[in-house]
Image (tube, rainbow, N blue to C red; front, side):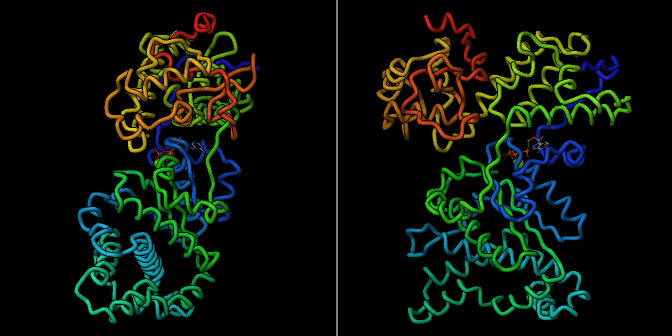
Length: 495
Ligand SMILES: Nc1ncnc2c1ncn2[C@@H]1O[C@H](COP(=O)(O)OP(=O)(O)OP(=O)(O)O)[C@@H](O)[C@H]1O
Ligand SMILES: [Mg+2]
């Protein structure tokens, strides 16, 4: 079924913003694609949400916050301003300055902070608390934290400082062990936990910790901060089903913290990885087109009846297998990518006083900027693990689109030996075996792999498990091609 949209809709159509923080006040609820992953998080079965940049971690948290609040829960959202890795590194002594295991210290400090925040929101409703056995909590907060206007991070740092002071400060040895034990066991608040559980029988508290990657500097303290939070989250979630601490984490950050993936076995059952498919991304855009039409006061009956594919075709016209195929092939299946690409194509069409559906030429014009931005963003995402990655991408500029394993291995060898020079890559590239480098380029999305001879090429975002060592042919992912001046013509590339 084809849908024709009012020409006026062309001027006002809007796919929403590229970040959930801004979308939440602009219709995210109406446009939200409710995946099974979201359900598992909502039910509390999964509490650690992991995904790449722009995959929808904040969207899940924003929706969770909204729905929990609507159901009467207390919601505590810890936002980016609350962490500053630089401050931590400059405030805390280095691990080798004393024998203090940082991760454990950070875990204790996080637990302390989160329990205090929880008790504070519960104590605000002092009257209700008084009946439920919560007078103790109320009194504790009144006596210890009533006047403190300290920011959240200060509370955490002050606890860390107490630990650090004992660990590496001039305290007599006998006292040290005792004092440390007290602090690690959170003695100050430990006795309040039974009262807290009782209060939680009648009230629900949800704590959301998002955007841990803001200002990430890969320092010792940053890593201990995040892995300590994981430990704290796991431990607090055991207290009561009505108390849930959720943490989101970017995939590369997780890979950058050895303490975390070494603990992966312990966390696996709590971990939810965000995945998108072509269908779910088409649904996401379909919902946004309908929402925009409704918002702007257009008659949406036909759109409401039409499927997501028909909504798409009403907005984008396309060649061959269609514009959706063309555009989705140029993403790593992340919502932010398709939203941005759609928005830029629409802008291009508007610039030429066109009309709906947006012609393919507008999509192609948008692709230049889009492809360049994506290549740079991806390289930036991996700047701690693989600094100088953009320069490695650049080495593929103007080369064929398709490579045999042999040719690719040779190129990788030339990169590792420095025969093809790159800058800023000293920390990782010279030690890279060709196979390893192929793995990195696959993981970051630059390379797609042919699973079987004569078959199509797939990217990491499309296959869950793959024996990369067995792959014989590779291709540069279409998202990077325009930026790198690589033609699509497979015939030419194979030559
Ligand atoms: N389930 C969903 N339904 C509808 N829109 C979504 C969904 N998930 C994400 N989006 C949209 O995709 C975009 C990117 O999502 P979001 O900001 O949540 O990504 P993120 O994983 O938090 O990224 P970052 O790592 O940069 O913080 C936003 O515009 C968001 O509204
Ligand atoms: Mg986010």
